[in-house]
Length: 329
Image (cartoon, rainbow, N blue to C red; front, side):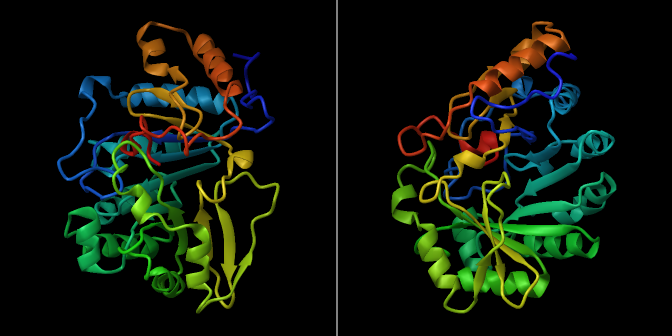
């Protein structure tokens, strides 16, 4: 292990210190831009990484220099005994930051366990503040549960960021409302351009709203100023709002690609390592585990896969094989 320890960088000098772990491809919502109402084929349970396998792989990534881990899905909170994973990851001394992305529908029930595990930041995917629009987007009537979950989590002292996928004709008139909501509740907001993938190809182009239009809408009522430093490795362009303490982020994979400052890799529920959200899987880690590979061999394969990470994504050319519920966005 010593010869590969701390060497997780790609061929373009980007240091990879952020691992996103998708713990399930299941979800209790059917958002129009993610999964069709009729559903999608799910992975057999036997193919999903067991918690012991997830922890083993996480420990290897930590040995290689990863310092931030995000738990995502699907909807991670629907996975049985997810508390165990939170608590075990919270014990890892090498881990500087443990965070969670959720749709918020089960947040109230899990908020205390999340805090006890050492998670201090939670991203909540919430695309509308309107109950009727929420049902149109998600096929669910759980809007009030999401809002309550956010409040309960804030009350425990955790920081919330609300992720908003902007869609023309559905929620694109709510941008200023979200900023107001953020200021009132002291939650950061991140607006995300709709990204095409295998399950939304019929609607992605007609619903797409570019970042420029989102910012123009917000600036009709609020003054924004950039606060992200150029050297920071992050996918979001981050702005402050004059007169408030919250931040407004923009993830704009199509109109403003962020590949030069990408510092992350992803682990899918079935153990596939993806070095780019929009690229093909780079390495089957579950197969390596099941074949009896020792830690050193797995670590060497991870290093090799990361060094082959592409310079930029190919979202505009190749998105037909991307299924967002398996990689956690």
